[in-house]
Image 1 (cartoon, rainbow, N blue to C red):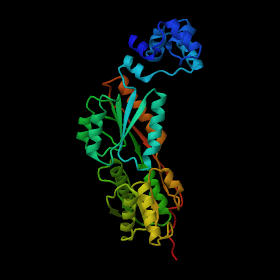
Image 2 (cartoon, one colour; image 1 turned 135 degrees about the vertical axis):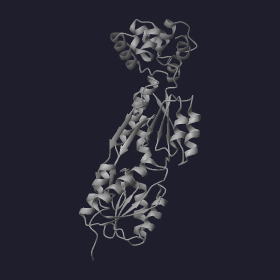
Image 3 (cartoon, rainbow, N blue to C red; image 1 turned 90 degrees about the vertical axis):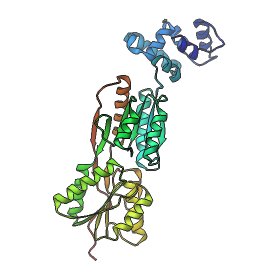
Image 4 (tube, rainbow, N blue to C red; image 1 turned 60 degrees about the horizontal axis):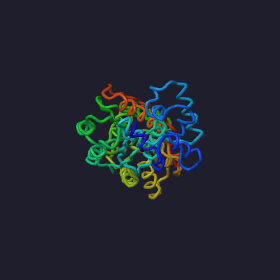
Length: 355
């Protein structure tokens, strides 16, 4: 408690009453001393309200927090960390920040972390498995835990990197590490049925990065649907999950007889649309294209992209909540959450023109 008092107290005043009087006269920002004086409690009690609320009665907690709001007091995270032994920060490692899938996810994670009293330290691994492992090691000791989104590292490397550190994986399942996944299997089956009803019988699978669990899972779902339907499926790739990778996928698509294509994600699909448009191929008249994730780009591109919506807000929020539980109760059993994607039909799919 003494350490917190020293950090939060203005140095030019000595004693609780002197500090509080100065704050009341508007000479400094509100601190635990001004709140304590207004509430008739000790500064230590105010500190406990913000750092160890379970040690304070509900009546006192409500009184202190009400006065804190009135005075505009904001707890100092660094000072709070001296009591809790935590950095009050979580790490977030994403595989490629330039992919439009990630900004929405980052925003959800940041908002949830803020509500739970933590900041977020964001790191871009730039599609490098080695960089992911290196960044986890560098964050150790600087954050309370880490979320690794769409990791490319091997299972063994992830386990070793996360050893002893609270960790949650997004879109990658590992039995002994907590995970939050978006499972698009049912939605991709629905996408296949949508295309089949429009008369398509020959399909292309434009596979995503070989190290991506999501790419493998999506490919598996599409293969399963095609087998069940008895339709022709040509597999192409893998392609990088970039606009350029999508253009390469579009060029490869035109070398096949497929009239409809499943792209790994929306960014890839937009590259496909650009390549087809550049070659004078009409969408959906000559080819139909399906993406995945439903990022903003999917709704603004022309034609608007048929895709699968990922529950970004829920993915980010649950990941933070799971990580927070791990931080607060180390050694607990890993949690695994699986959320479904939702199929959304737009203008990039339809019947193939017979003219």
